Image (tube, rainbow, N blue to C red; front, side):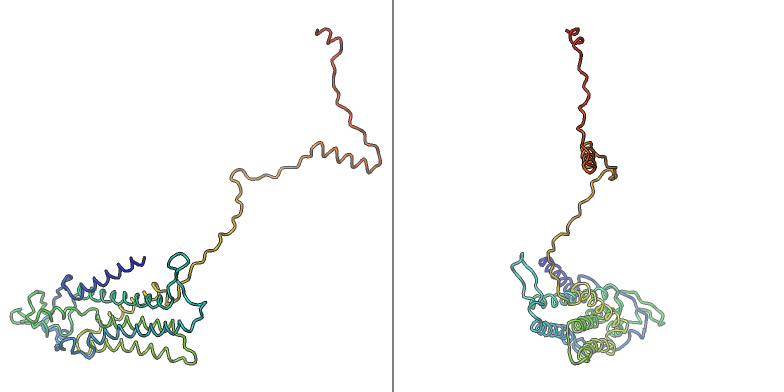
Length: 330
């Protein structure tokens, strides 16, 4: 199963790469209305000029959960007693993984898988829907005169309507859901659930809530920046939050069992089996029949109590043939 999981992980990474850096999956071309104010916001510039650039977002998404899980697992490993440590049998009953290493690899491996899965879901939604960003018309630069736009109700479906940079136009068609919002919220929910379910704080009740609110606030701030810079709509950001949060909740609840240690199955002896009744006719209660010897023994006991001699039983009558019969027979 370990090699099978590696194959799944490699396939997930490869699919995320094809969505992100290749044109294997073309973006759906969606039309637009002339002079549509919802898509006429000014172009905010490249992503690197944002207040929350992708490099910063991806660094925080990678570093914060990794550092949190490492600190939590190392602290928990040295606090727990030896008998309470989690062990995983590798071969028969002789080889065990180190419980600290096993939990770290398990939790970070599932987190990495969810990170690439969130990227795939976000990119797939953007490719399938082809929804435009608020600055789409600024990047598209359509020639309204050539397109015959005389009314805002005129709907344009031509594929060659845009005269701007093809790369910027393709990027402006990927808005729903917001990938940065999905990744940031996935990271925040995963880390918040880890802090809530694993950390044990004594003497203070505000440490965990404060840390969780800070992580959630950072994720929400990324979405707010995307909206204020006219890079995404509000519904794009909300869809990204739902996507990332749902994937994190699913992985924590159904895959790693809320960060609880795995239980080792102990071989128990099979329960004692009761004898099954023989298949056939049901048992019948028959009356008891005394044998002649039992009757004779009981008769002797009664006579001995009465002080009477017990008569010997008479020999059975045997008919002997007469001499005459024998003579005649000869």
